[in-house]
Structures are given as structure tokens and as C-alpha cells.
Length: 358
Ligand SMILES: NC(=O)c1ccc[n+]([C@@H]2O[C@H](COP(=O)([O-])OP(=O)(O)OC[C@H]3O[C@@H](n4cnc5c(N)ncnc54)[C@H](O)[C@@H]3O)[C@@H](O)[C@H]2O)c1
Image (cartoon, rainbow, N blue to C red):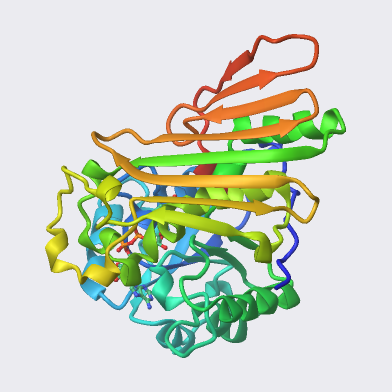
């Protein structure tokens, strides 16, 4: 199956600046949950980044979530804070269709729609899972921001959505924010400036399973499994460096929950409540050939305890090793170049890829 081309056109973070003047910028937000409004789960919180980026220009015209109480809760907090002007006029709706049916002046229309609901409701052309297609029809020309994973259903249906977005030519960004890290952009620049060809990518993503206490995360049909749920960020980074993949070349193996090496001692949920066939693998390892001829591997592990994840990606080119360590928390980039066996080591202060992407 053909993959859509990889986009390389991320402007440098130096070119981005706080947008502090101009007209109101109307945004409609889909999903009143953690990724859009923050939690102690992690640094994600799109509404906060929009507030930082747009300042008083931000006007959230709609918040769409079937659970109205959740919308009311997050709006009450925003309206009680110094960013209340962005949320004073926010209307709540249970669905995109309800929002589209509401009377709206041209000034009230959104300029961007942020889709942060679970993947089960988007990324497909099936009724009830087709939020993007509904939006393209009901709000043509409006920019979209779609959270990852872009889909959790059938691949062919996901491509129907991807192609519809491409054909519509609307600006569309996906929540693969690691591309926007300064370290990742530096890796891209080293490759470009030295006219290098990527030979191989090696990605390793080891989560700290003891800290994952959401039972749906451990349930394959609900989460999509650890590769779709979180390894997808490293699939994206691998593809960002290696280009499109020969899908037929992908081979994978896993250590399942009931195999001896897959026995875990510190799972915080009661896994016995999940049907055996729905329990997640503990290790998944895959290798593939890129269309360029390069090769790639990914290993995802549900193995570490405590809180901190251990994640690294290595990119090899003739004479070069670019090794990115800990992209989520404190990115460190090791660069080995021709002429020396020693690594140059770079750290990046106060880099917020969520803000850069928004
Ligand atoms: N890029 C990242 O780093 C990152 C981080 C966290 C979450 N995510 C992704 O964001 C998505 C949402 O995750 P979350 O943690 O916010 O989940 P959540 O459970 O905290 O919130 C999801 C919200 O969506 C609402 N919802 C359900 N169906 C809906 C529908 N049809 N229309 C509108 N709203 C609907 C739910 O009621 C809930 O309030 C997931 O795909 C997740 O993988 C991405």
C-alpha cells in the first residue's frame, strides 16, 4: 500500500514567534480530556499552548464532548483564571453535527479545529468514527490538528481519511510533536547540510509500566496496544528520518503476557479483569526496509518500573551517528562525525515541542 509522502517542511523554531496582535483567532476544540486540557499524566495540554501562542487573540468558540459535565468542569476552571477572555463565549456541544447545526455568524466560525478525542471516534469513514470527514464536509477549508494515533481501525479506511484531507488542501497537523524538538531539527539539519543519506534507524522505547494505571491502556481493543498507543511516536520519528517504508518488508515478533519472559511483577491494574486475548504484549520488536533502501528497527518494551521512560533513537549515515536520548523530558543529542571517535554532546534548554508545533 502507498504511504503518503513524508513532510519535511517544519519551519525552524527561530522563525516562530508569539502571535500577539491581529484579529481574534477562533478555535473549536473536540475532546475535553487530558491532551487538550492537561493532567498530571504528562506535559501535554493543547489549550495551554494555544493560550501561550495566541494570547488575547484566542477565542475558543466551541468545546465538543459527549460528556457535557467534563466540558463544564474544564470551562469553569478556565473562566476562573486570567485566560477567561478566551473561554467566556465558548459554547458546549455533544457532537460535531450539533455544533454545525448551531446558528453561527461568519465571525463566529472557527479558523482551526483541534481534534483530541480518542482514536476510536476518528480516522475512519465509518459512521461514528469519521470526525475528520464530517469536519471536511461541514467546515470546508478550516485547518485541522489531529491527535495521534491518526487511526486505530482498518488501515484502508485511515487512508481514505488521509487522502480526503490531502485533496481538501486544508492545513492539517498531527500530534507527533517530537518532530518539532530542537534536537530533532538539529539532526535533520546535520543530514541536510552534509548531504547525507540515512543508512539505518534504530529506535528503542521502554515505558515505565508501573506508572501506567489506566486499565484501558492494558487492553488491546481499547488502546490499540502499546505500539499504536505510544510506540507510534517513534514510528513517526523513524519515518521522519528514513522516509517511506516498504510496508510488505515489515517483520515483527513479540513477547506475550503469558510467556515466561513476559511475566511482570508490578502491574498496578488488575489484569485478570481483561480477557486473555486482549492483554498487551510486553515486548514488540520490528524491522523493515525503507523505500530508499535503508533499514530500520523499533523495539518497544513494557519492562521498566518507576516513572521515567527510557527512549532513544539512533540514525546512522556514512561516518555519522546521531543519537537522541530522552526526547520526552530532557533531550540529549550525541553526534559522532568523521574525523573523531568522540561524541559531541548537545543539551537543549526549555524546549517545548508542543508549543513549537502549535
Ligand atoms: N501527542 C501526545 O503526546 C498525546 C498525549 C496524550 C494523549 N494523546 C492522544 O490524545 C487522544 C485523547 O487522549 P486523552 O488523554 O485526552 O483522553 P481522555 O480520555 O482524557 O479524553 C478524551 C475526551 O474525549 C471525549 N470524547 C469521547 N468521544 C468523543 C467524541 N466522539 N467527540 C468528542 N469528544 C469525545 C471523552 O468524553 C473525553 O472527555 C488520544 O488519541 C491520545 O493518544 C496524545
